[in-house]
Image 1 (tube, rainbow, N blue to C red):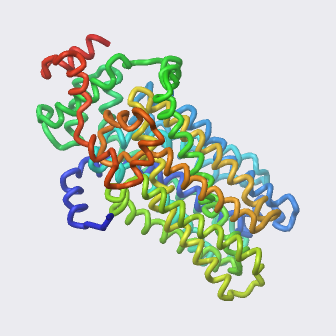
Image 2 (image 1 turned 45 degrees about the vertical axis):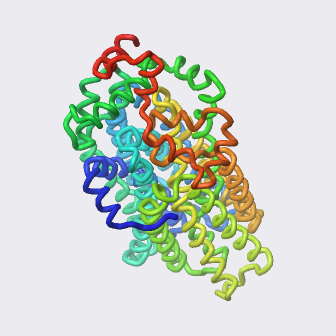
Image 3 (image 1 turned 180 degrees about the vertical axis):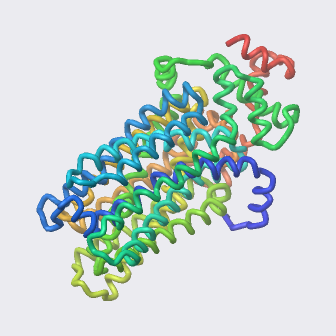
Length: 536
């Protein structure tokens, strides 16, 4: 049974302090797109923004225009995620983050300085595409970079920190919108929307400065046959000398897993990702998880929370923004608790299952209540509980389908094609993020309560998928996760649903290099690293 063991968490922080520091710095990449996700919904409702671009909120085309402004960022993100494979594979994870961050900052500056002497949306669109390209590139590289550096004991918690930074960015942007709305009393002052756009560059600057002092991914260095540098990077992030037995063993495992797969070009990686049923399942697994994550409906609330609260029955611009800010606080708190008490204790699979059930209940209640008791503008008992269900939804999402798909995607992808698979997974995420951003205002206007019923049904389906198709990976070394996909995958995943029968417990202490040694007839351990590289 999962419990919040704060002393154990504190011991982990001291033991793995360098891994956590790397995680904190890299996770500012998650804050980048979280900030934009949260700010744009509030900005669209501001009279100052509508005045700057001469937008008519009562126009029948306004909902479609809102979708265009929000979703054009996701278009840029899609192509950024697509480019992440080449950039991170060619230049390394660390340099890829630097390149992406600079692109994002340029895009943010363009958005901040638009509508000067013109009411055209063209410059805003261009800025959001540029910024989106940087965000998409970052979003694909950060989970890869963290998972390839983090020890197996805290890997899930570390990768999940990207989602924690994401929701923190969302919350901060909510309250920036709220604070600006109260502080700048002039109704049509363009600073009301320019300041939120400008402030989103702050986490980008922190990431740019911090990542310079971090090490490169040891697994990427092994892939490029830079073994000495890989040993140094691995020892540094573990806080141990390069000749420490644990460092030597882990490096051996990494080298053994990469044996014969070093410096593979894109076509070869594509062929490898589809080379057999087991590898193809692992490759497509990340894509499917990201698809389901978007169909929870979370980004419909992230982007359009003020409009959704208004539709449920909470009237008043400031009230809607404040309720949205509280939504963000709930998301931060529950995500943090989930990472400390659920991801590594309860496990990935049960976090997803419980999350699916809770999300489905919340969405179904909101939809059914709106159908049976259409909002009248007064906060009666039904409307209040519907608002509570919005917060209930985020509670279950924040420890389940929020962070866990990033964790499982980065864990289950084979080492030699991880950058390719993460690119495909994040392309899928941003594609359907785009779809959700585009269709949500239209669905809220046309099918109203049916929007929430659709998302509730999707939550039920993804819970069923979790039972039969998602393995438990907590505590398993990256190089041994392939064992979870041996034999009958469905039977194994169903078995993992019973904690006492979880396969992860049996293989968490396995070492891939020893498996190879047994197969190769017992090559001396001290010669294995050199032998693997020479063979490749």
